[in-house]
Image 1 (cartoon, rainbow, N blue to C red):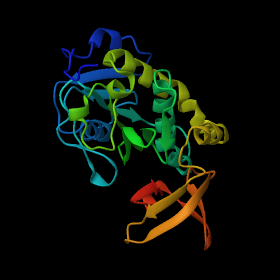
Image 2 (image 1 turned 45 degrees about the horizontal axis):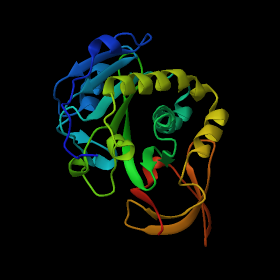
Image 3 (image 1 turned 90 degrees about the vertical axis):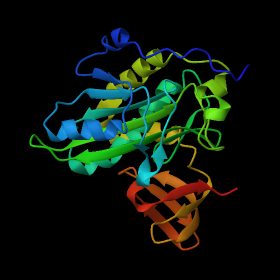
Image 4 (image 1 turned 30 degrees about the vertical axis):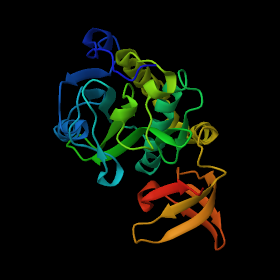
Length: 262
């Protein structure tokens, strides 16, 4: 495979318009952050189902304000507005559900794709996608903004770090981004009812979570580093660790990094 990129088509708004309600997709040619745009709309009372996708994100953010930037027309960088009709205690499942929905969509093309807890998509130990969830208060109640960045047609040289990969790198050819976006959004829409069946979601997520069963190095916000075995996902979506000092339960907000110990 030549590493020279083919001409890069824009997303096709006509195919995206055929998505089921309430999904409605807006395409921006360039924007600093789709999450910021959707969060502002959520605060103004925008109904659930809004999707803002950009052809070129210039100042995207991942967890803990990590940078997520992409060249034009090679990735899928988009944000989805949801207003879950579940108790707030179950919102802890939202990032895991989002990761699982994206994994399920991508697995048709790359069956070996897994989830690193809480919601990074991996092929082996290389990162394919990242997800950032933000809660927003609005006059009509709380909303969640699901920000998704998926490496699609980046060449080796365009990947941001050596620990990243893209679908193009894994498959050896470019992927139609519009078809892929339709598939990812359809998966997310179809799987949202699992928020009402968290036991089923827990089992499905655990089956594709490559963090489980591995010894991991956990970096905490206070600088402490813990080495333990990841043994389970609990009833709230937290990671259960077993170490020398017993069992520890960590939510996604409790950690800076969870890395497999080589």
